[in-house]
Length: 157
Ligand SMILES: CC(C)(COP(=O)(O)OP(=O)(O)OC[C@H]1O[C@@H](n2cnc3c(N)ncnc32)[C@H](O)[C@@H]1OP(=O)(O)O)[C@@H](O)C(=O)NCCC(=O)NCCS
Image (cartoon, rainbow, N blue to C red; front, side, top):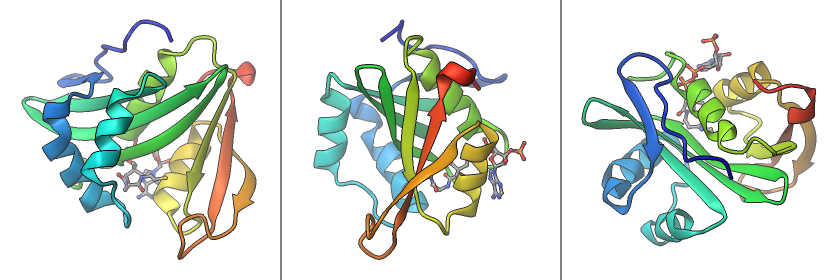
């Protein structure tokens, strides 16, 4: 992994590593954003994993978004992306993904799963260059997942 990401995607926001003390805000955003939010135990183990990079986007004192990435050799897996309702549509998710990927200058492929019905997320990922590369039946229990992949050797978003 490259240097830990600390950058300002746009004026007034700040992307930094997630801390255990962020979990209250992070779990609140997760619950407001995704049908199957993670338990506190999962969040703790992800934050503490040496294979993960978990970042929060701050605006003032408030956490307004989060992103998680896991790495294995030169492949990355985006495990979590969410922006607090009320702060969406301002480029924050795009900036968080670009910021997280910049921590892995040697990565080659980025994978993620998305619900076919999640139009906003699918459009976001397509706009960054992700392509649909597969389908995981019943991945979410109630719905299949589309597997999307970004080939960084073709250029970075
Ligand atoms: C998906 C999500 C993370 C997008 O966050 P965001 O900060 O609003 O996204 P951005 O402002 O960075 O949008 C970047 C691009 O994504 C696409 N996009 C974002 N929201 C969209 C929407 N509601 N409808 C269609 N396209 C959308 C657009 O292409 C947009 O680019 P543009 O603004 O230049 O048109 C946010 O809606 C969210 O938190 N949703 C709930 C959690 C979730 O679904 N996470 C992904 C799980 S796989």
